[in-house]
Image (tube, rainbow, N blue to C red; front, top):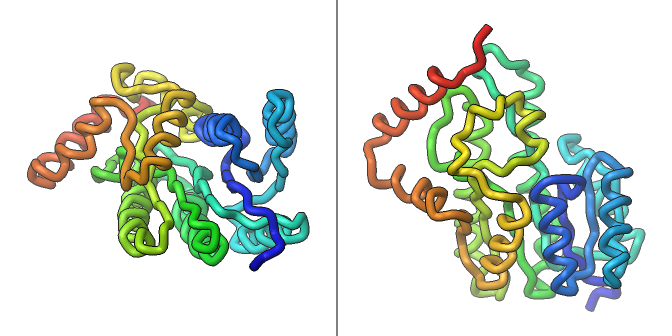
Length: 264
C-alpha cells in the first residue's frame, strides 16, 4: 500500500475548461492538484476553491511541452506526499493557419503538449490510478473527427487523443479504471486568442460555455462514458463523419477554411 494521498490532477488548470473542471471536481469533494505554466492564475483558483470550504488544491507550475515536464511534475507531487488517482489531461493549444506557413517549432510544440505529454501522464500514473480504481479524462475535441485544413496539426492531435482514449477505455475497464475523451465543440476561452482565431471563424450555434462543458464532462466521467460531446450539434458532429464519404468531409472543411480564413 502506498502512503501517498490520492488526488485528482488537472493539467492546463489556469483558465478555460481546465479551471471549470477544477471547480466541478472540487465541488464533488475531490482533493486536487492543479498544474499549468502560470502561477498567479493557479493560486487565484486554488484560493477560490479553498474559500468554498474545500481543501486548497496543491499547485505545481510546470511546462508540460518540455520533455522533462511530466517527470518534474511527478517528483513535485511525490515530494508533497501525493499521487494521482484521477488524471485530467486538459493542457493543449491550437494554431490557425496552413501547416506550410505556420512556424514549425510551434507546431511541434503543439504535438508535444497535445499528444506526447497527455500520453506520458496517462501512462506515468497508471499504477496509482489502477490501485485507487480511478480514471483518466482526456480533453479532445470534435475537431478530432474530421481533417482540418487551416488547423491540420491541431485536428490530427485531437484525432490521436480520441483513438488513444477509446483504446485505453477498453483495455482498463476490467481493472475498474474509467477512461473518457471529452470532445467539446467551440468553447469561448482564451484558446481562440492563442490560436489566432477570429470570433467569426466558428458559428455561434456550436459554442457552449466552459462551465456547462465541465459539468457534462464530470457527469459522463462518473457515469463511465467512453466519449462525451456536449451539445446536440456537437454530438451530431461526432456521428456524421462516420456516415459520409471522407472526401466529402474534407471538401466541406476546405470550403469552410477558404470562406473564413483571415485575409491579408
